[in-house]
Image 1 (cartoon, rainbow, N blue to C red):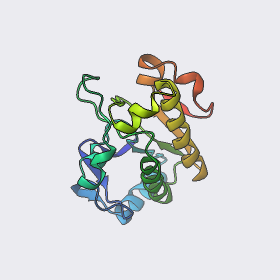
Image 2 (image 1 turned 90 degrees about the vertical axis):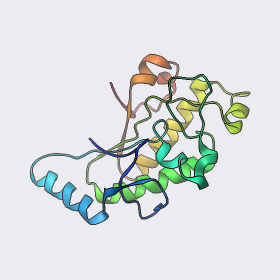
Image 3 (image 1 turned 45 degrees about the horizontal axis):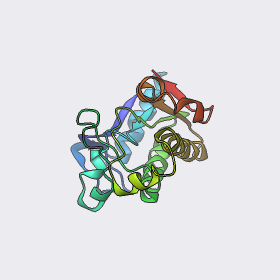
Length: 181
């Protein structure tokens, strides 16, 4: 796995969203392509990981996306999240996935989705009036899976929440999502 974006920022310079918090030594497109090509020549499959639900301060730390922050007061530690029911969230993730899918030949794309603390935003609180946390969570992950599949990638998520802390999500997930525990 090559972690490209998390709470601390992006280790990859997204052309589609240069406004995201990015490390000063983040990979350029050319460097990422060279690294992926080199790995392939060595028999190593680099699987790009873009945190897509939790660990998303690289997004919500940017003023124009601060409204997408979705932290439940008193929730799990200081874990972060983006609002899963905001249409802009899926659009943004689609842009990031598309860009990475073009550079990394792996058949997989890892969406992270671990250590998530969500449900505090106005949009999420409103959605939770008519759907359960499990339903919203699964719908969001299934939407991310559809994006990845549309790019020819198999979608992977971490298993900590969907297997152990929020197990009601698991039976609602698309059966082709790979849960890594």
